[in-house]
Length: 405
Ligand code: ADP
Ligand code: ASP
Ligand code: MG
Image 1 (tube, protein in one colour):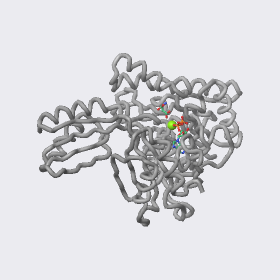
Image 2: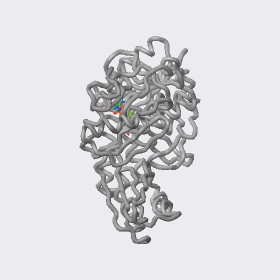
Image 3: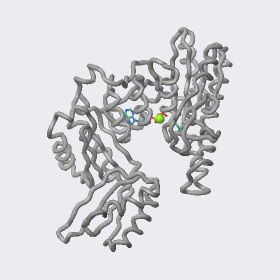
Image 4: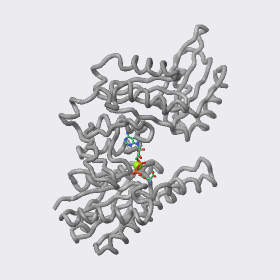
């Protein structure tokens, strides 16, 4: 008997009617003779709603108590789905992360899964039950509830697939696969049939929220295929796997991702001397703030400008830290902008093709889009620009690089 792991995201189970539809899809797999494990998210909007409640008490809320709160959305949906399955005449059981034996480290709000005791789920499957597991959550070895970071149900599903040695992890969502860019921004976006884990990891890390980056990383590491599928339409979706001949022969650029969750900070007129970068970024790192893009340039007066991006949530705290550093080396000015977007073109084909960056910059220039930061790697080029340029930039790049063909 094959084990099938399916994950349903928030919009797929946003109402009791949709949960009934999902239950019917699960029942088809069960009737085909498979063992079915289902991972669910909270109903759409619920996790935000819970988080916003806590933010009324403390706008910068973090830590253990936040996880106790935001993990509850998934407890609602596991129960509703299990109840629905039972009502339809099928034996089902709901399990929280803790009940399913999902052990994480103790980094609250972005915990990492350390192990899964698969015997719990296996025993229930052996007794003929459909097992419904809460995504996004786990438990520390001391029994504290943790969550895996936003979008973390994807990672729960992949981890469970690995623990059960499932052939493929099916991620059901509100689009019918991974597209060359977010289809909600670009009507010309094209569905991709196969993509390598390497490219998908880069797309999700750069902001394509269709999959949590950690889920892709996990699947790549353990060589489990992920298939992204629509809950509402039939189709073959998108397969994400290690490598694949068809993937190797495809386009230079696989897709365009964007990230609106970052903010940019600049400290101007700092002395150009060894150690200055660490003096600026050290205090930021001590506050557990991740820095993404970094640019430093030196003016004729021997003073440097230092610009970097941080998660938008951490913008205020990072600015405070920077203002303190500014005093220490009598910098001229600190300026910040939290209305930016990072746009990235991703593709393994870029490795062997020169001129992608210059084409990208000229296309943006022709459309009057000002670039404030640039960073490149072997398989991606990212630029930062004003948030208002997002739609135009993505659409002109998508067209210029023939991604709509
Ligand atoms: P779920 O609630 O099912 O986890 P998400 O909202 O997390 O769903 O992810 C699905 C969304 O990801 C889509 O609705 C789409 O707007 C967005 N998205 C961003 N980039 C892409 C892309 N390249 N391909 C497909 N969807 C994308
Ligand atoms: N409910 C969580 C979130 O909204 C986890 C998920 O949906 O994957 O981030
Ligand atoms: Mg998601």
